[in-house]
Image: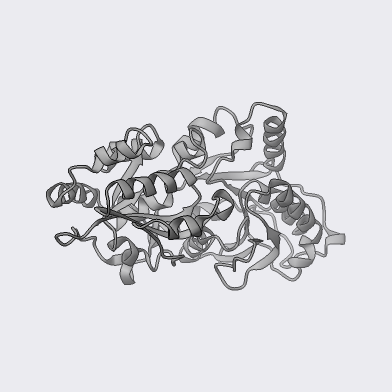
Length: 399
């Protein structure tokens, strides 16, 4: 069995739980260690907490990582030597290298990068420094895991100095063949006189999307309603709760469990908002978000911004609705003639793509774990970690 030490930037992030479920379904045994964001609680039991970090506070996060590096040996004391170490995001690579040294070195490190921070793309001293740090911290990386080909084409290949094989692992829905996840999507046009519903689910961090959807729903005077679910990044909004409360055609229903609740929450809406202007022209234009796969898996017609990787992905499958401009009038024009006939046509196109486009099943989980297992070094090592004072220097290299 593959033992995985998973170092998480935010142990309360549902994406951490999804990745843990994926690895465990593939036959791995996972220990999660990482930081907690504010008052959020970990998404899984048995998590080793290394401190508290704050959204949007880059300097504070660096300080928290530096502190965790000093105490990591004590936090991991008694843990068996892992077969691999996975570092989620750049800041966790520092801890991955420290953990590797604590356990005697030569453990393959996997760098999981599903977002490209805007600071990495700057051409000034700060950007060069951060890329140099990525190169240094990633010197022992055996595999880079990322979720969109645009990240590879626009950053890792032309800009990043990281040298490692790459695995493209899309943000597909975990479907282990049981429960609600097996339900085939069904069309659900609204009853006569009832509104169409657009669902914006997941990581809610885009002030521009919030305002655009609010303006659109007001302009349509209730013909369309906006349903919000997930985890708002409150640092990115002036007053998220107050804003939504004052919108007559917008509601926020809190967080949900992924994948357990997906079928139910997407069945309540007709369209899925797949647009993100959080880092417009950069990360938000390159990503393929979780909500893209979740919504399509459960029959919600996706809405994407033309010119983005999401739009290119949907265009290749001949599905979805593409917005030309980030304006209320453009969105109203896109949806102006929406009726049962057009909706059913768009729904059928999504359904015809087949579930394999959207799901990561048990066999996929097993193949992933098999790929990760192949990274393990062949050297024999002690079963338990050494005390920090007895550790050797990191002898690992690119495997």
